[in-house]
Length: 328
Image (cartoon, rainbow, N blue to C red; front, side, top):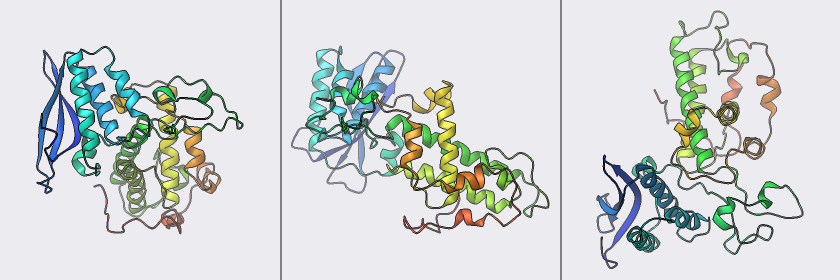
């Protein structure tokens, strides 16, 4: 371990597994080497790989919450419950170093390790919520949070905790690839008649060009990039609104049916009392839903070129970089 006087910043935590043990490493950067000099530093050794992954996830969350405003510290303490004193001591030492480290920038390396670390488990006020009380463990077992009562003025709910962000991101990436595959399978760049079933593309768009589908695939990619950058999806045009709607519905279906993809896409992410509230997401992520009646509820197929309005940028937010290109 580095001494407290060293100019070292902790960037992220990773686990290394072998048949007999698992080790937790800190990814550290010496502030005198701002060009990106990074090293791995051993923190603790545990016997259970799943415990190592859980502790790494909790530590990566804590990096984004060093002032303990988002409630990650109680989760980390709960994760440490039952661990030997040696591991507890090592973890408390590393927490002190995290507090002394500089702010985490969402560079590529950190995003690869913990891309959803900035999404909060709850919005519990540091001094506690007037309705919930002390907000123990990010309201994990809070009964008040389960009951809608406008008179309670609960301040703790969030609409996109880490697991929710991870699942939505995965579905956006999946649909991006699916629509690109459909575009490549279309035999002609100029559609002479409506194409066959192009699910998940809405039926209204089954008579558009290959270029249209590539731009629609990019709408899913833009949603995924928003989340990777630690931001809630922010549709910039109607195509992104439609893409986000399809992604939210797909994610909701995975949760409702308890499909294997749920664990695949969210495993290792910390659980939140507010996970997977897709009805709330539909409410807060849209300014309006004019597209629903016009394009999702309308089964008539538009003629080629009639849907270019999908890609017209809204006045706000600022347009995306027109040179960002395509995923493939």
